[in-house]
Length: 292
Image 1: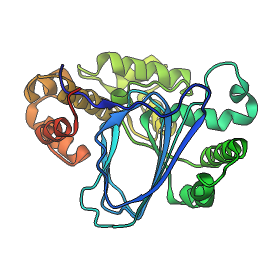
Image 2: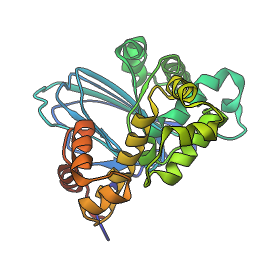
Image 3: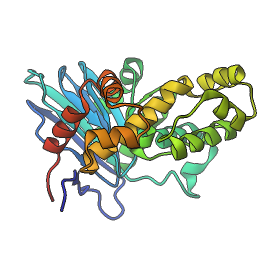
């Protein structure tokens, strides 16, 4: 078999809902992995650790809180330059059905449901949100009554859903489409996903939305937080990252197949956005993966 990340087997069994692991440690040793269940991971006193979620790679500060809800989105926290000997990590894995016809699809849970959908790309929460739930997270593992532990965890999720969290992996890498997009935005995104290998021009996209180029530019920035060219580049880089990890194509072939007009342009943009060259990304990622 080729190289791939570890598929972690969750300790959640049968009718279990939560698995809470609260630990103090000096280093991170677990390799890159993914798992079927959802995960909320909190880390403090670990400045310098590198957090990788899909094609996102960032060095964290003293506090880090990430929610991941995709079974296929690989992730890892690596020691990197962290020198702390008192790392505190709280990992909550949970198996709650937010998608079908149960109570969690009802109105009181709307904001949580939206957050869970967005977290398919991994969500990183701002410091304000972390401080809001810090005490509840810190005491979660000490609650003996399962019902009260569950209600406290649901409160944590609800409080987090009030904040603007930052997505980590690109949507093309995480292979997710957010149904909360407006119809026009979704049509445009679908077109880009189907045509990212070719040159895409603003007037062409604006006509799909039935708008002038200038009106569409404002509309797209308002709905996505990015201008059209940034979005297209991010999509192309997401697909390129996947090919670097999962294929044996040369970097020049990947550059060409993902819509970049020349190799040097691809290398420059990739390094600017990802902090490393395509060849370094491929080498580092394959080192992190284990053959199973």
